[in-house]
Image (cartoon, rainbow, N blue to C red):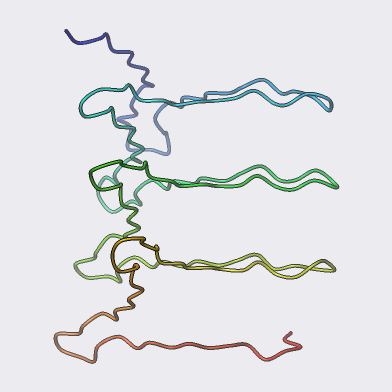
Length: 171
């Protein structure tokens, strides 16, 4: 049979004024200065296929903005390191492993979404952050490829591909 559901929901706002829908907050206890803070885990069930975890923000009504989604780690203490964000897919023994896709939405009249990857800047330390893009290796077949495509333009030029370094001593 099917296991039971847990539905947690906050109220809608049907007002045309500056009122919003209700909020849901899930919070773990603080560990204070000596103990680790509480752990929050969202885990879908196993099965065939396994359970999904979906995060979807609210759509805009009329001419408003759709909701934003932010994944952010906590700041570091005075002498510590800030948290790490890992996005990983599962492995497979005989089938294909999962893929990772980052894609923005298209636009009918305005500009389509923008993707930016940026490593952090450093001040008085060991150096700025680094971005590594590494294709996979294979023991029995060809290694992974690294391909960059620019976008095509139906009524104008296709997109440009630029590799730019910054001068040393930048301001």
